[in-house]
Amino acid sequence: MIVNMCGKSYILLCEVMFYMIVFYSWKDLLPDVLKVLANHTQLAVDGVLIKGSEFRANTVNSLITMNWPIEIITSIADMFR
View 1: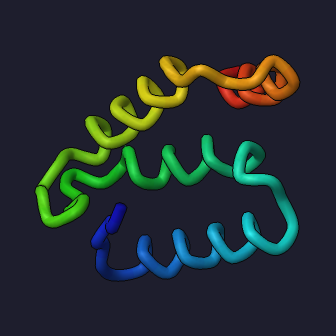
View 2: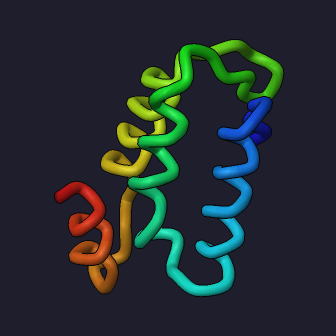
């Protein structure tokens, strides 16, 4: 998936993603990344324009409908606090 953004928000997102890769699990920072993206009026996702709030809702919906292994259900649920 490709999400196109411009300006300072893009730089902030890149910094957050860097720290996510280096210091944290994706489950720890995904809520913050989704908040940043949700605040944008429009994103280009795979070449399609979409509202940031719609992108967030679609991502959360995908996460909660996935068939997760029982070993990580608690970690996934913690993201939604």
